[in-house]
Image 1 (cartoon, one colour):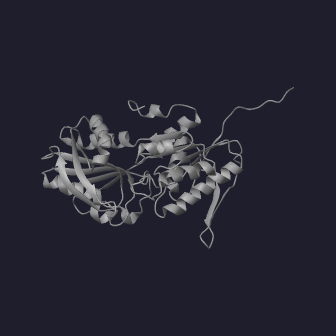
Image 2 (cartoon, rainbow, N blue to C red):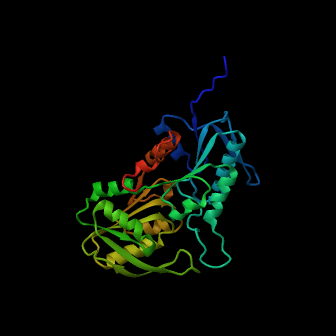
Length: 324
């Protein structure tokens, strides 16, 4: 009798140490467990990783959040990918819900790097066959990687929460700057609500400093929903909220996928300018950065569905009807 080869596929989930709770929730939803690993740092700061079971021939998904210190967690994920490649994993998918260096996706001046492109090159060189991320700061990053990129949207999750909690009759979607108008327009279509735009100017020589100039649209007496992909120091969002309040907004809500929350974000967000701040858990939020107005929605179900679709060779776009 000739050689018989099994065509069954095996999937494993691996996680770094930045946000293991997210990976464990994804694993629970998929009915599996996170693969056992050794991850630790040497005294000089170098990182060591090792898989404690065979990964030969598997379809591996490497989940890692990228909070501060971002460079440390990027390196850990790269080492995990390299270890999988050298252990003969069949396919390796990097799952980076908050993609590192995503804001550095182009050159603003001469002699600057395009750091987001460098990140995709590093993942590819380490051995990744595929990337998966949530709400990239710029969709063009998908074209940087030498392979398939699954760009997941948290918009349906957050928009449904807003509609269920506040209704849409008195809701206005607000773009905090001209660069987010396209995304805000999709939000407005989803919620069947009018759109307003805040025009701002940012000095490229002064990072994290924003000056609001004018508001386009009627917000007086309205529930205003500011939408963005992330909240870092909170300067943009706070300036936008103050502009909305100055123009007679009844309530100011914020929906942002990635809670970076660099200081002094928590102080700004809990200052009383916002009625509710809605984020997802693409990044871990320590207890000291939580506040009364904060609502955290789980991104794990979306990631779990996307991982299963990739593993089953199904369409990931089918998760987002109307936006495929």
